[in-house]
Image 1 (cartoon, rainbow, N blue to C red):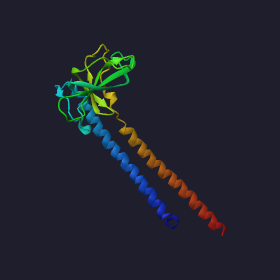
Image 2 (tube, rainbow, N blue to C red):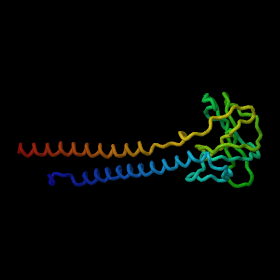
Image 3 (cartoon, one colour):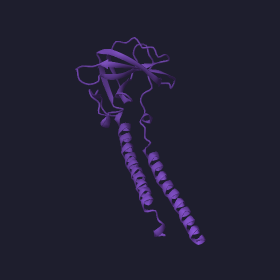
Image 4 (cartoon, helix red, strand yellow):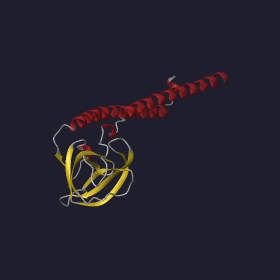
Length: 201
C-alpha cells in the first residue's frame, strides 16, 4: 500500500488540509474575540459620554458610546439607504463636518432621515448622539434628535456589526474534510486500477 502512495500529491493534500484546519481554528478564535467585543458594545450605552475621536482607531472603535460633535461647517453630504426610528425605509443624510483643529478626518454625522435623497438645509452646530460603524470613515455619529426638519434615524444596533466567524470556521473544516474524502476516493481508484493492471499482466 505504501509503495503505491503518491508521495508528492499526498504531501500537497495534507498541507492544504492542515492549512484549512488552521484557518478554521483561527476563525474560532476570532469568533470568541468578536463575541467579547459585542458584549462590550452591549454595555456601552450605559457608559458616560466620551469626546468624539479626532482620528478613530479601526481596531478599537468606540461603537455605541454616547458622544457629541460641534460641526463647525458642513463640507459635504452623502445620502445612504436607511430607516427611520419607526423602521420605514428611505434615506439617511450624513453630513461631512469640519471640526476644531486641522488634524483628523472631521466627523461624519447622521443628522436625520427622509423619504428623499435631497440634501437637507443645515449648516452645522452641536449634535449629540451615538457612535456607529461607518464603512468609509470607521465611525459616524447618529444624532439622537434630527435636525433641519428631518425625522429621527434608526439608532445603531448590534446587528450592524458582522459576526460570521463561526460559519467561516465551519466552512473551513468542511473544506478540509471534503478534500480528505476526495483524496481517499481518488487514491482507492488509483490503487484499484494498478491492482487490475497487475492481475492482467
